[in-house]
Image (cartoon, rainbow over all chains, first blue to last red):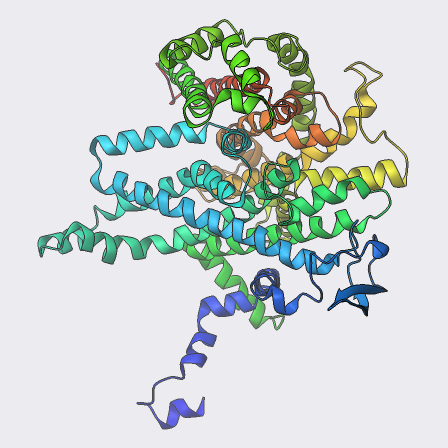
Length: 327
Length: 305
């Protein structure tokens, strides 16, 4: 407060400026959104730094320690340089049917699950945006063809298409990404086309064209920046869908194959032991559920604040909450 | 309308064409049928048996001709007509889907309740719950239901099937319970958001200003106008069940189309795979067509003439 009075010319501290931004305040004042963002941050960090944060080797089998419950300890034996070494281990989330530490497996499995979710969205959005811009900006016969293709793909059930693709190509990480590219590009295409259609009639695009800007420049400088918010929102809602689909496919045996692991595959492997070891099913399922929920809640918040009508309601409610002293 | 039907047929035919091309051009159907260590003689014999030594365009025409007559050939594994197996399984999938779909309808009144006071307590609870249920993996929910209801409390059988009659209902409860929350959540969300959107419109103010009660506005005007999106969603949901129940069918050993398809893929049973894909695609198209018909009834401004 004081600095404002004394030095008018001084630039506002950028951190303070960001902190005071209405959006950031709205974000900080919304416990559910904040919580889901924090959770996502932790999950993504754990996936990125998996070798550092996972307590033990996720592939290390200790058959004598199979199906240890959560919060239990056990002595693992390993052979190092022809010598038997013993190691005291603490299993926060128990062990699986081969005595592997479940927390480590969960962290490494999350690596695959989350990268499938993110890469799937990346690939399908790139295809969708490219086709959407082509359709919306150039119109004509290309537009008709692309939109007809969108209609066709939209009416094919996702799982059916995924199973068809994986049946023919065989199950693998890359092929799952291909499934998402084939089966999910339409949504991005539709959104992009809609935005582009309204933009190309705007005065600033006409002005840019009038001063001789090329199509590439107009698309790059004027169209793409306006696409970022709607696409990010859509992406945030598509990631959980992909994660759920991947887990379903892996569960059915058409997704990630052992020795690689994802949350869906962990569930599929744990399914046979559900009666004797509940945690092998509960733990990865909870991980999928919480991750998908966090992405969904965060995506909805993004959609709400990027919509002018709803945004006003959100910002207003935070202001009211602040005045009431609930914050 | 005829154009609309033609469009649907075109989509199904296109999908089947893609399946055919993918199997026959990208891959080799015989390779999909036999194990990796099959001898060359077996492969050649199979090739001759299924007429795969004929030129591609002949087989392509033949493929469509068979589809048109619903003749998918004999199942490689069960030596029964694939068509017969499909018609055997179809009622099971349809029954399960309809039950879960009906339970899922309860999401609509929940959404309406939430929309009455946006950002109120009920709204927040419904909102969070609906997001929770659409974020749950269905197969996990199915496993949890087995763990709690069947294993822990021993109330219902873990899996199985005893017909659709009065004897078999026990086997249907858990699969239906595993399937319905997703639909419930989506129904609640869409109902809520379309109602809120509609309430903000001018005609609501008009109705209020002429002294109409809130309940009359909500049920007489808003719900009627919101029903188009809700009906679309309901159709989508029912269509979604046709392929979405696959995992649940597998977990509960429910002999439906989804299980047939997965078993077919695992057994490399090509006729079964083709038949299931075709029937599922056909069902989805029929449901979508019905939804379109409902539109014209709900909103006379839309027509397909």
